[in-house]
Length: 429
Ligand code: UD1
Image 1 (cartoon, rainbow, N blue to C red):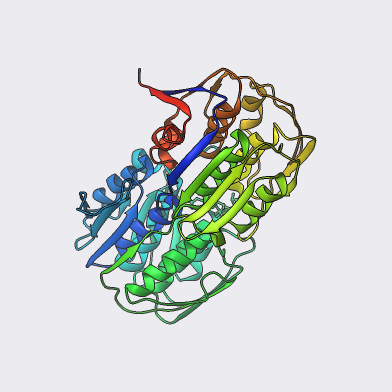
Image 2 (spheres, rainbow, N blue to C red):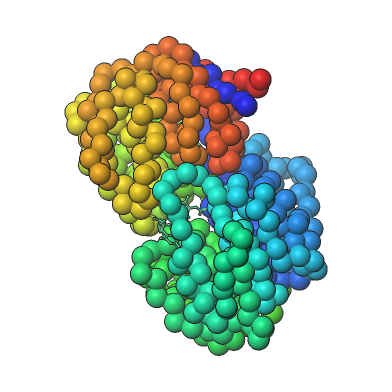
């Protein structure tokens, strides 16, 4: 399996093109199942998770073509996918495909909405807590589907089609909101989703669904209204920029020092994280091209942060912030409120010399002047990239082993960082 070798200590200077958001591209591709016409998605990132979802959709009979480069395309421009689910030949999503990526479970929503049946293996994905699907099942049941679990598969049936309903989530869930939203577009009557997730990726999917003929309003607020329609049609949509990738590179620059332009980044997608970085001493400026992040001379100040659903500080940037705080001048506290057990990076950051203690959901990080490079193991997607950031700032050599998770969520990470002066290379065994 590939490894990444980093020699730390270089400042980052230059520019990085931000890719399309993985967490929007995946549900957008899945939304392609809702119509027999072609959905065209631009700015889809080239990631292992996208390729895996292509295989899963292909298994249902969906034709996906990836369009090559066109003259005038900018470097790092994402791919364009043409997704055509004219004939769904199989409504079963098998274990060996779904078990590798949690979001693939969401195919259950369009399949039951359009085909009135689906059999989807219980999901896998990053090992961050138990990550149940009870609320997704609850939402589909409210919409009139009958659900059962047999042999590791969730079986959903709605012989007469789905019916609009009131779905009130007891906790904010991105996956639950995506599933409820997609399923409700083809349900008969009106659906009201309350305590809905407000994440920008939900808004992006709702925008695309509306282009496909759906009638969704209120996405981005906790109350989403969907008036069901009998059919959706083809559309063309551009995936929004990845706010987690943006925040990750911003933290990398804050940690190493330097000055980097994040091209295409949209500040409103991650204002809470930018505020934390400013508090920590980074210079953040918004300009026509995106966001410019710099830190020259001044040290990193400690912060106290809790993760929260959007617009709060994202759990997907928690590990990266912890790496940054490992070098702060003083003691920081980070509380994880979304996922239990999302602290697997703590023991790996300790290999760099980071001083972190855990008490339940709260990590206390006592900053030290300099981290030292070390061999480390990538665990989940966002944890993996926190080790890369730590390695960029650490003295000496770091070897990040088992980088499979990084490829799931970060497009051309080594290329983007080395273009800014990092000493980072992939070693394929
Ligand atoms: C999505 C993101 C992930 C991000 C997370 C929170 C994608 C592909 N992934 O994950 O990167 O970290 O949002 O912003 O978009 N829960 C239940 N029952 C359920 C569903 C969820 O208890 O049926 C719990 C989860 O265990 C977790 C919390 O709700 O504690 C939030 O999960 P959710 O928002 O659904 O996260 P994901 O959609 O899996």
